[in-house]
Image (cartoon, rainbow, N blue to C red; front, side, top):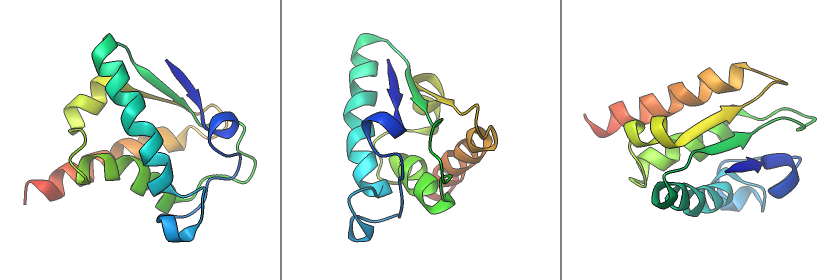
Length: 111
């Protein structure tokens, strides 16, 4: 399953919390969780396409969206490694950045 963030969520995702606006990471996470659960049920992979976002994506948005999946105990790092693929030809650094946020969130839960 493929999900293009710019087309289906917002071409300008911004902010960490719902209080930051309707394009926030918390709002995006409410989109991600059901998609990931559907992929789990269908034995599928969710490809998140981060291309075509003209202004770039802030680290707070990425950390809260993806690290938040682990912190909120919706998914583990291992589950996400099997379910989630990030596509980002425009800025490949997002891929490693997201993996790191997921990993750090998992480490925090183990403290």
